[in-house]
Length: 229
Image (cartoon, rainbow, N blue to C red; front, side, top):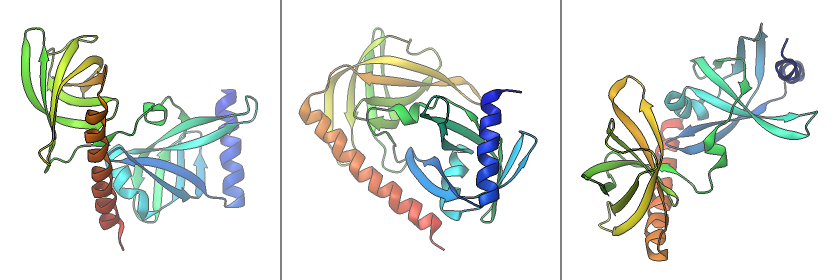
């Protein structure tokens, strides 16, 4: 039997017996949502039952998982566990047995948020032989994520960006690099590209920072509206 898995099982059993809640984290439009819930039952290293908490349900609805910080007693450091959500309602949540994960969201140097579909940010992208305009999916002071037709951009490719914000602000001639490309589940023709800013002038950074702060307020207000009882 996996020794790490056994450590997690023992830890969860202790919390269950003592009826101690654990902090779990999920993400709503890239904003972390933290609540404390009690583990209720554990079944054969496969399924864990938890007491429900309506405050995290909108985030679970988007991500279908939550994360738990586990202090490893041997290495004396925190590890991040991921549990996939199998079933949930206001009173009960059922997940897979938590497993060790590497989640980029916990290691980001800059806050990233999901862009509003109703008040979009647009990106004009210029690369070698390519000029296109598209909506921005998410943004941080470190870069943007965009959905594109498969193969339009290549990993490591240099691009020049112009970003247009809903309040009319525009930042131009921003050098960036394609640092990540991933497939879109269920869509064979589309992929998501991560474009990291190579350099960013202070006035451009301020425009992005202002947008992120405002968008965070919108997301938090939306989340509160969804969770108000």
